[in-house]
Amino acid sequence: MQIEQGLAESPAVPRRGGGDVAESRDAEAVRAVVELDRLVRRYGEREALSSVSLSLQERQTLVVFGPNGAGKTTLLRVLATLLRPHSGRVEVLGESIPERAWAVRGRIGLLGHEPLLYRELSARENLRFHARLHDVSRERVEQLLAAVQIDRRADEPIRTLSRGMVQRVAVARAVLHDPELLLLDEPHSNLDPAATELVEPLIGAASGRTRVICSHDPGGGLAEADLVLGLREGHPALLAPARDVDAATVTELYR
Amino acid sequence: MSATIPGSESARRPVASGERADGRRGTTPTLNVVRALLRKELLVELRTLESVPGMSLFAVTTFVVFHFALNRNSIDGDLAAGVLWVTLLFAAMLGVNRLFVADADQGGFDGFLLAPVERSAMLIAKLLALLVYLVVLELVAVPAFLLLLAPSSDHALCSLIGVLALGDVGIAAIGTLVAALAVRTRARDLLGPLLALPLLVPIVIGGARASSPLLVLGHAGSPAARWLLTLGLYDLVFGLIAYALFDFLLED
Image (tube, rainbow over all chains, first blue to last red; front, side, top):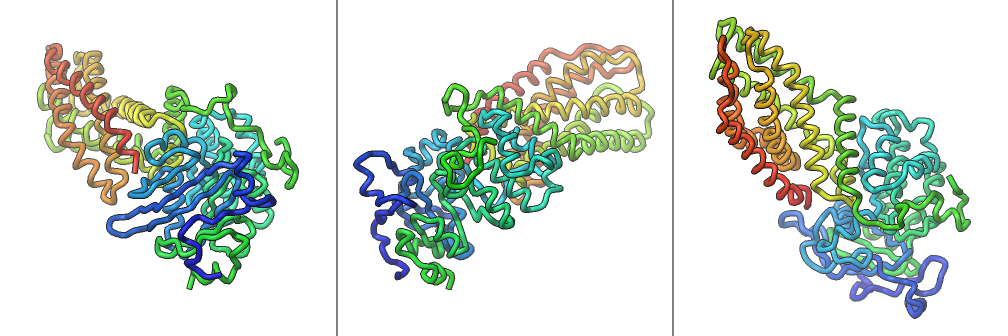
């Protein structure tokens, strides 16, 4: 398929393992979790995101591809309400951003390049700290420490853990409050195949959450995606259902 | 852990739901958040010892320098009060500069901003943490000051503690506000003191004037009420300004 194709309007996207979203709308079981209409975000004079429009529905996965500096992380941070859009309309979980950002905080899980963990605190202390911020029980913390198999080293400072272990703790932190929307920036970085499998029930398709994933892996990303967005210097160069996109088309974005 | 079997229904939610017991997903009670933030703050400081030991050592070293530079075994009145307050102020700046560094460098701001919490909880927790640092600083610095520069037993120590406490609240309020403003800039180590010192001048003036009669050798008096009132009002005004502005400092 051609890059730049189908950007005029958001395509109807089939849900993973289900029929077209358009078909199931009559039951009103599907709602847009992310709606972007000509989103623009600048850093100074430079436009990091230019006129990005898309619609992502409940329990779908959007995979964002693009070379370094294309605007992927900026997009995640806008959706996480950490950056304000400079123009355009942004709705996350049915709430307008930034006006009602407070209403969606606590319903979003962000797993970015930074683990958002204090290096001097242990995994358990970090998760308990975030649990208190989200009013989540200690039992949930213990369950997640066991789920990511970090419980035996849970009392050691984060700075002493390997990158893979830190990433596992960061996954636990991101899903601690059972978020409806997961924003994942290369979530499998630093994870070995066993650890990738370990976190799959928490952040993978099996989690049943709506997900936005930034990826550089065409094969793996497409396997996860319902909808594909390709960014190039902040511009949406590709927006299509995953079934219409092949790895070669994604690779073309990086040339 | 309930189950992690991929493909099964239970694997979709492998652990218990993160919802509250009452099923509500609103804002976390601010008092709980303040307690969590303060606990984290003190725990990080205990592990790293980045602020308080440096502040205390700076103050003691400065008193030693004054002891030799003034070439006097004891000072009193205005001079003693000035030396004490200026030293405490500069020592406090070391703590102010470090106050938000771990949050800025380790993603603490993002983690906090993603939570359903009142932004002012961070202001209150940081202000309290800075107050704790200042109290520990003074527990070391004031005895060192009395030993090195004002070796007299008839100082009105209780009154001096009261004046210091009033000054500490102002330093903590202004320091927290300025530290939050400076930490996201590239020149944070420079900008913090440059912004804070002019704002803290009235605290030094009020604190020194109120402390001066307490440090007179032989016949310690009591602090003038107007200087105590000045300190109290300044604390209140900057407490309110910090409360009003803090949300905007955290947002993009």
